[in-house]
Image 1 (cartoon, helix red, strand yellow):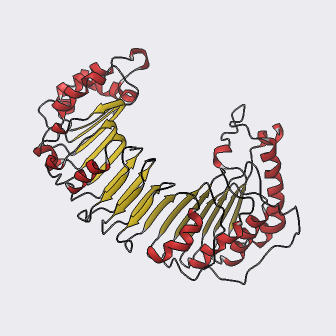
Image 2 (cartoon, one colour):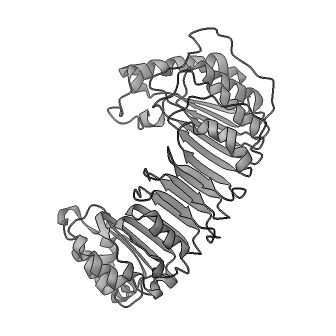
Image 3 (cartoon, one colour):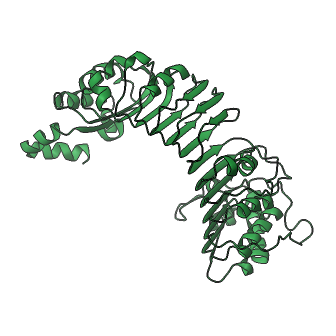
Length: 435
């Protein structure tokens, strides 16, 4: 219930006031608590709410002060009053670095807490802190914590299932011990000083990882079912290495801003891979990169059901299908029985991209939906009712989108099976007219 409605109900019902003051789950932030006309009073509101809840034993406290400076000096007292034995979820999102007091994590708190989220904090746990018997989820964002300190915390958190680290720049070496038998999901993004991850957790099945120069060492990888990975040349790496070290992958998302080596054709297989997303960004993509080489993933993935491809488009560097020989490369027919949904965002008239799409529509006998978006998502303007388009699309992109539509009609449209739905997304009509 919105705070204003709750306040009105409280004025009319004493029973509602008593019930609300006993409510054990609180999420407090400036968006829901403060009217723009009375900004600056947030600390008074939060202070009053927490005092009304003293002694009831909060189960959940989420405190979001991302834009509020006036409330910052009160955080210590709020946490001392609210974080007591029996609390299960604690989320702290602050606008500047806060020295999180480890003394707050008493025996009672450590025995009950299940989820801990810290944003913009200095957190210095030691091994002497003691065990977190029920902690299953740990998320640290912009937190000052070293690799050794984090290892101490992890060694004391045997029930941990999910670990997420975002922009924790003091971590140089991340070591995840084998005692974390329950850990199934690991996410590491933006930790740019991180040199190596050594994970010995035996049941890890989901990884989200971004790192250009980070060495990833996983002790047991047979359980891996889902992998999100971003780093240079990851497309080639994924095809060459992952089938042998992660043979049970079912979902794979890979992203790269540097691809200079074409995807090799190999004998190894992703026997269980169902969902594949490949994102290739603009930064240093080689003009000679061959999109047609991605056929290797189809050859290796007999169970593949969905394929999403994001490609750069603002400045077409590849040979256009209209630029040279109109003859397209073809491979021997290879039937794909499971592939149902294909979406290519940033689709262009690049000859190798046309060849890849033709291969898909000829061989995916169960194809249900093919979507070709001639404008990348970040450039697509939504809402025809608006007076102007935003972002403004360059003339080069508009011209390429027009050429792409012609290429689709010439080379792809008549090859799509009647039972499959072909959707071609173009710039809006105003973008066309302005171009």
